[in-house]
Image (spheres, rainbow, N blue to C red):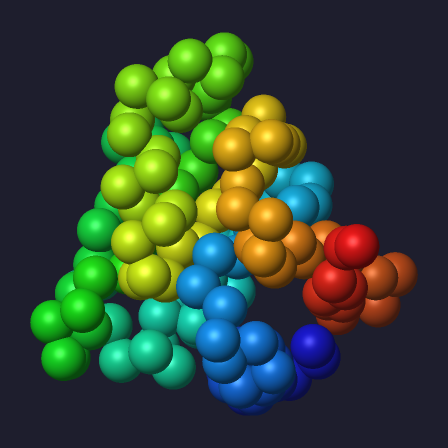
Length: 134
């Protein structure tokens, strides 16, 4: 992604490519643009709420124009798997609603088998590359 419009095009392409998928896990170092890309995905999905990083609350629930929920997780501060269990992850991951997960490494085995795992990286020219893992 190089131009400002590229992120919207990439988000649209991703959702079309994985049109039957609902759980997306984003891997990448701090500052790679995970939250920014999730904002673009939410824009494509016509989320009517303000999308921001859920770092302090771990989970934000947004509503689309059709009132369907979109869940946005940030597991950066999670230190034990039990914290995700206490959150009631099953109610979200298996709800059939879109779930976007930042810092999913600790969730590991809890992620659904059909979750789309994506690695984000910053290139030397400051553009971004998103690659599917697995």
